Image (cartoon, rainbow, N blue to C red; front, side):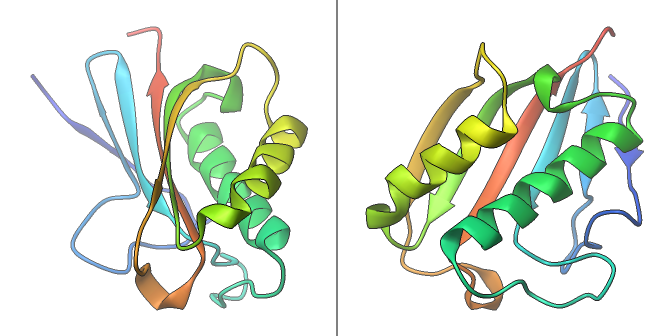
Length: 128
């Protein structure tokens, strides 16, 4: 099975030895995105809402680079440094995603790259 690398300057460049996204078969696997503003290269700080919105915008831009949208995402994995932020992240998701929502897992972790509070990875279903 072949792999196609998906990359865009409208999302942060990889901060390690990985690709922004990889398409194989009818799936696109989007690497975990953190709240980095791709225009400035700076981490978005402030509220968990601001961080989550930036992460979802980065995912949206990777989807768009591949010719897809947030509506094509079938699975999200959310990593939070504090599960007390779970309800806030849910509210941001309601603003950014339309029903039917993707499947999802949310996991509390002890730390994330660059000291951020949220990281999200996604799986997109394509037409093939």
